[in-house]
Length: 175
Image (cartoon, rainbow, N blue to C red; front, side, top):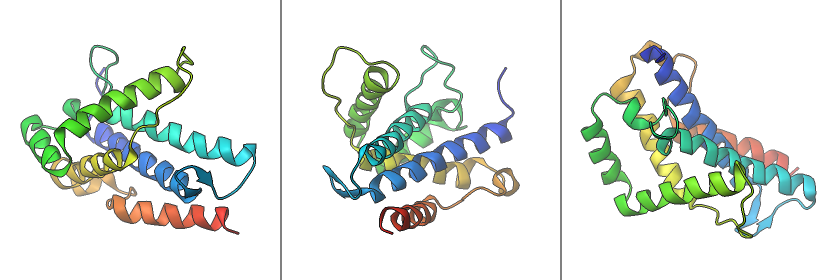
């Protein structure tokens, strides 16, 4: 049974928030692309889990389809004007890079998070485009789909929310 529209919009907004929060926590823990700020298995696991959560949440928003999963949070099952949303999204992010990212996210999720298949190396997806698209989706919901009271208590500016989360994590990584 489909969710009521208000509840669906709140859940999509939450997924966008979960994505950027985990991305902020993941990035705050890195000294460089290959080095963490804190050593030890605990910090490696924590940082990897933040990344995995990003992939899972982003897939709910952009990858899951009707064929594989009901995909009730996927953009084309949520927004009223699919043509407008897609056109605006692809003004914001490169369409070919986005399509490649969808494949990379699906592969990483399916081969390394949900299952551990035969591959020996996991190719971590590019998170900048994922971040841009999640922020776009969130902003689109806030501006074009939701009524002001639909999202009461939820962040309505994802860039600000990311900054708050990043600062919070940085204080923990850099005591």
